[in-house]
Image (cartoon, rainbow, N blue to C red; front, side, top):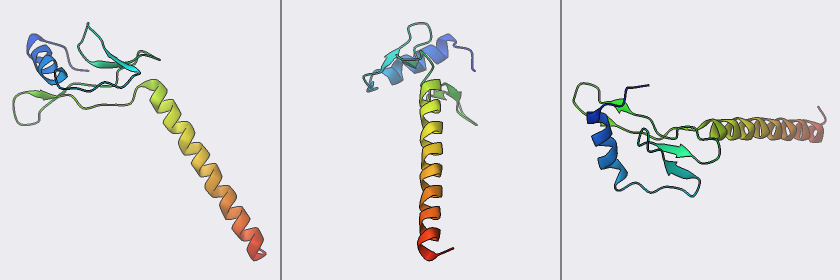
Length: 93
C-alpha cells in the first residue's frame, strides 16, 4: 500500500467531496479512504498515476465483500452443475 503523504491526502480530500457513500460505508479519518462498517476493511485504495503526477482512488472489495463474492461464485457453479446433471438425465445419459 502507498504511504499517505500530504500530497496523497490532498488528492483524497478533493475526490471525497463528490463521493457518494453506501449505507454500509464510512470515511476513515486516519487515511481518508472509504471503509466497510461491517468488517472495517478498506473499500478504496490509492494508486499513483503511471507516467504522470497525481493519484487515483479506485474502489476495491473489502474482505466481507470478497467472501460474499466467493460464496456467490460457488453457488452459481453448483447451480450450473445441477442443471447439467438434470439435462443429461432428461436426455437419458
